[in-house]
Amino acid sequence: DSLPDDPLIPDRGEFVDALHLLRRGRVLVRVAETDNRCVLDGCVVYTAYQPLARYRLIDEFKNPQGFPNVRYYRLSPRGREFADRACETWRRRPLLQRLAVRLTG
Image (cartoon, rainbow, N blue to C red; front, side, top):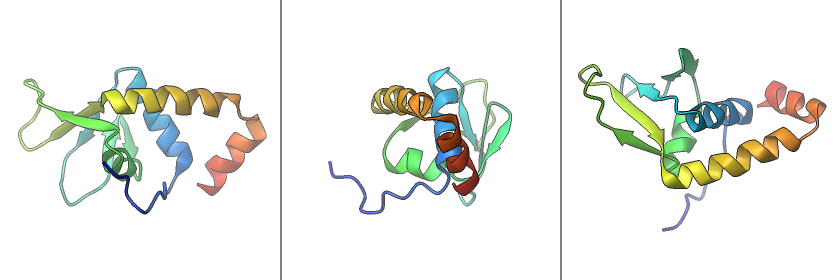
């Protein structure tokens, strides 16, 4: 399996926040195929879905209590390993560096 050529993550702060919440067992909800926005823990996620899906960090699952035509995702085993490393690395960064990433994407 080769990774995509474009490693761009549009908003690294949102991406790390999504990984953190997914590590805690939260579910990413996608309502429309044509819209890359999703909902995670009650908040709109604008850009994190595409890199999460592109790098196979999330897996879709069937939610028997869910709504028709709504897709539900949780971390894949690969995603859990990545999230553990990424969140630890993020926590070790100095506060001003994390703030700069949040402001610049």
